[in-house]
Image (cartoon, rainbow, N blue to C red; front, side):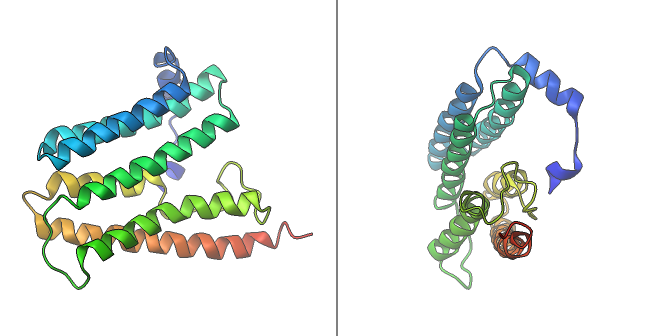
Length: 202
């Protein structure tokens, strides 16, 4: 939702021009390895360093698309690799939550985190599968608009990791807020596929 309302073409062109010394796929791959390092740092208790690297990983993920557009090296393979790496990084974020301390709740933590992982990974799959099957041709992901794109839930995830040590109860509620947001996004995406598909039926 945030990226739908923030348009910074001049800044994005500057990013693409400044960081064009590496290819878009290189930036995507770097973001994955940084996220892996961030996970291990959080697992070992180095929360501040882990959060910093998770943020750096997200920045690299932002850079890759801007470099691709600036250098005109955007490709279907690059889009595939970017989306695939995003899902690995999402998994690493949620895997990190298993090593944090949360209070007891109405659901066992593993069940809560499983549901969060499922509903986090499902929206891009819905869009990609609707496009792949021709139900809603949506190569730019603009037709099926969503409550939460990546930037929204990554803000939640980073806040959970950063604040968990001092405010475990607050971060537990943030987990639930993330789950509700992503479940609503899944429901919204499915409904929009059925609505928008009427425009493409033959």
